[in-house]
Length: 404
Image 1 (cartoon, rainbow, N blue to C red):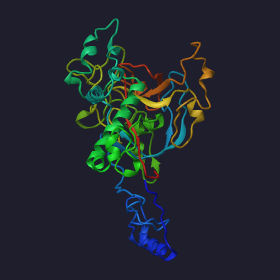
Image 2: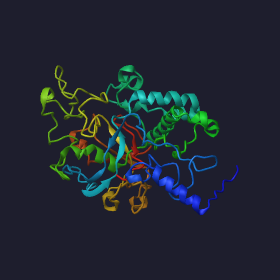
Image 3: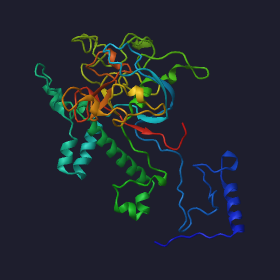
Image 4: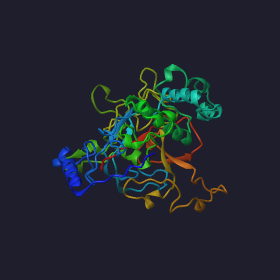
């Protein structure tokens, strides 16, 4: 490749710099991400000429499928529910969470079947097998749940019920695959593969972020992001930076029933109402679901997110530590490993503890859980290669290129 060595005399540089500043829009003539101008405001060199630095068009982060914008801000994380389990593992603390995006629904069976379809087409049989959910999670020695083993994932009637039987690792793989295919579609729409021989040769490689039309990666939300999104305290604001109240659940009030309109008296989520009571009585199945239910059932919270309480628990990114709240960073907190709280201190190897670097947090409560677990601050954990009939997930994504 021919090396491009720019050369300008002083007068040409001044002329170029003056043109750069005068040709930029917004901000009183200053360059912006969406209107950088035709010349560099640092060197005066022209963009996008042969051999010159290429600056792609950028109109802001594209909208990703199924994503809702979650405006960040200050919040108090931690359990707002009485600590019935006496775990003391989520003490209240004030943090700031940056804006991000989150799926408005849980990932459904139809989404996972789509994933399996394309994995079967372009991956090994071994990888396809590793991507299959464990449908035997429905099996119980003293219950007749056998029909769910065969039908829940694949029968069309369950298409838009949340996928279950997936491990944390499988959820991570799905996020990786989704990032690739969504960005490939955006690249095709932008004509990238037609214009770039390099991209044509390696369609599964990451498309350069500099192109301006790709999205950041889909991923599992951090525990802080998930909890913040479930609280949805944007709906409790009054005047300037005043929040009138916190929430025990993702909706107002301490009650589990809808207090308004035609839906008055109906439950706000899909959960286990009491011992042996999953839905109510025939003729008045109040919460409407003996197992999981349609991913758009029940009113969304104030961020527009469905089923942030009940239906299925949801995997989050963090490994579990009972005292994570002590070690947190107060801006975008997350625990990715055992930093400051190594697993050696828990004696996992000798079976004296269940805590290790391979256990992950899940949150939200499920169709088989009592209401206590639907409070956003409650938390539990499970090994990252385990799966149950009560855990699913949804994806998240950073909001790039902004300072909030």
